[in-house]
Amino acid sequence: MTPHLIKSLLNNYRQCPRSLWLELRDRRAVREGRAPVVQAQYSADTLKRFAEGHVVVRTAQAMWPDGLNVEEAALQASGGQRRDLGRARALTQQAMAHKKPLFEATFEHDSLLVQADVMVPMRGAWQMLEVKSSTSTSTSPKAYHHADLATQTWVAQQTGVPLKWEGLLLVKKGFELQQPGDYTGFLQLHDDAELRASVDEHLETMPAILNAARMVALQHKEPVKHQPGTQCTDPFECTYIGHCTGADQTPPSDVVPIRLNKDIGQAKAQHLLDAGHTDLPRVPEEFIAQLWHDKSEAQIVNRRLAQAVCSGQPLIDAPGVRQALARYSWPVQHLDFETINLTAPVWPGSRSGQQIPFQYSVHVQAASSKVLAHRELLDTTGHDPRRALAEKLVKDQSPASTILAWKASFERGVIRELATQFGDLAEPLMRLHAQIEDLLPLLVPGMGYDQLDGVQNGGDAQVGYLRAAAPKAVRQANNYSDAERETKIGHMCRYCQLDTEGMKAIVARLMPKPWPTPSRSQQHEQMPVLQLVIVRLRLPAQPHQKARTQRRRKECAFCNASSYGSGCAHSMTKKHRHGSGANKCRWCGSTSAGSGCPYSPSGKHEK
Image (cartoon, rainbow, N blue to C red):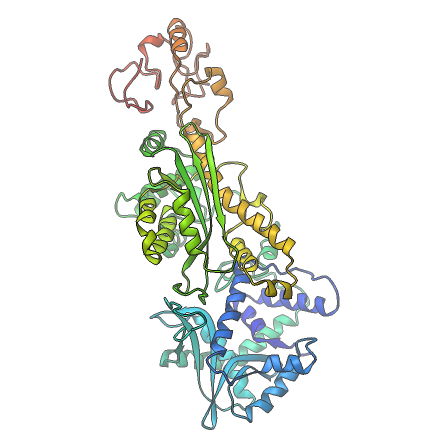
């Protein structure tokens, strides 16, 4: 029996034959009323891409007001009960006789069915246009666009459709919406010689590709020879990636993939892979240093990252941490934005792909680590959220205090965009912009996003916003109840709040204890979970403790234990040091005097 395929399934085969096999088994199970053997899992980013693709196609259809949507006509003819592609194919043949623009024109040849986004009549022929939500740039369209267009073209030609030429409609980069609903210039036509030559090459391979896909579809066993690799996410994330990377096929947990900081396009990581390095802890430090030709910040950061991975312990520059904290203007304000970038902008003054903030969270933290306030905003009205957000942000934050962010460049960029959009708020917004600092990239145990319900990443937040901000009629048509909406809003608030909670928790761990401090035995018991023992953060002794220390000549200068030899948790050498406390620095245990202490806030040895 010849398996019937559609364009999306053939695209699955092009990306990975195993994906085609799995989806065909899923579809068969659904038709037969059985549970799928392997359930496809669609990420939030994938769902958003599907939704945006639908919007862009609708926008393209508006360019031909007299056009006929064949699929919708077929659905109406069948009473709106189910999608009838057979009826759509017949209606396409009838409609082409009227020489009007067609949308979702349906063709089938050799058990391969396709639907053309746009068919425009010309003199005695047709123009086929494929609509993509990708951004148009000065470079040529992506390779998979060529293959996609070639599939449509091949089937249409084989059914006898006289095609004059084919092209792609891509989104214009930087398109700005001037008036509501006015998308003039939103899409740009690509039909250059390079595109046509590439399509012609793909046309020649179509019979072989189709036959190979059928062979995979007819296999009784899953083609497990196709193991996880770069094809799992190129050009899109496979919906079966979770299945193929199951526990029995996951690489050993001690193997760390090669990922480097500020490595544009993963070029430097690829250089290490080409040299045979696949496990980051096994890469010699000098190899990483050689990737950058100077002692740049990127080189320093990556060398530290490599050291941390190799040791399996956090690497913290204690003097640098104290120096950074000393520069802050307290109380500090922890800021985190949630944004959405829409391919087809919906609010005047917004651009295609622009990050539009719809939510923020702010935690205000004193130097004592106490949280003074939490402020937030989440706009789900469906209207342009920027003005209300900018006004409240100016009220909620003080330009006199340091603002900390996970990635300062992102938060600065959002505020700059707001300042450009609203001139009357530009001055107070830019004062906030000047106060933003990067927080050290540390993690707080027990505050992972996987513990959250409903929203666990930025993609989930964007999809949640699209649903919560949709008009009530749309929500009702999709059976999205008010209770579900309120639950999702709560999940979104908790997700955004966790970002700023994490930042203030990190600062609380790094801050020296306020005066007066607990006893040293208590200090040992309250050692931070972040394991700051990697670098010794000595705290000043209280006056009565200092006097007592001076009397105890047989106690370790670092931990006050009476033990000798190794085993000290606070000494850089891990050894106990004894002697007169009066002659040793209470921060580093050195007998030196004057400046030069690496742990004292003043940089001087204190007896």
